[in-house]
Image (tube, rainbow, N blue to C red; front, side, top):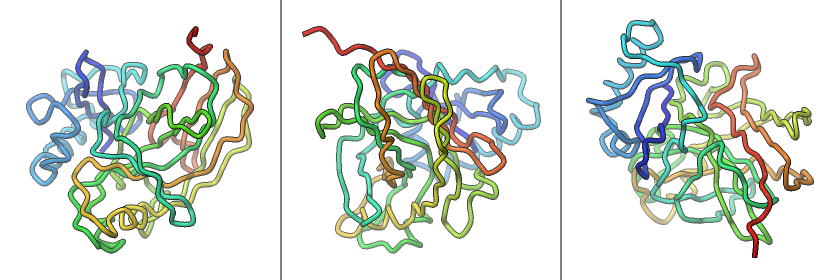
Length: 258
């Protein structure tokens, strides 16, 4: 299933289910109102949301509405923690607060893309297989840093279960392509091959993880000369060109006045 958190004036937004083709959505009211509720009680709530998603995909919900990515917060605006695992196994930990996919960046910054895995409860010293079993959702994230300091982490509009990834998901690995538009011009795409279970197991090596912990697998720096007034769009797509998580689509605003 595909899930999003619609802005409603609250810190966490309102949980919605999104159709497979990203055209329709339906509030999850009566089942769960926030993403964290789902993660805290996955075994009970997830099957009900799956049923709702099936009905939505078959056009059987009277109160479905057009999905508008611009209304989305990050899928999990306040996680239990955010850590990025580098290709060499190094871990960088930060707070678990995530910006919306369309929030302007307030100054040019260095960007690093990551495939983000959202987990349920995971015991310390779990292996990759157990970590993969505890993984609930995946999304695309971007870390933004100025002079090495993290200033924002943005997420794509959607968090999805692995079964929605189609041919791009096999044996616990995601294989996809990161597409990038800079000021409307296509940049060279980047092939992605990531194993989120391994990243979660790395985080759980010495301590347990709570439901809502988010682990990012670094997809590398953007290496783009960004300037105020630029626009940037990042989208992780299947080999067939289908968007997996919706796009991070933002403008870079001038820095705030001193």
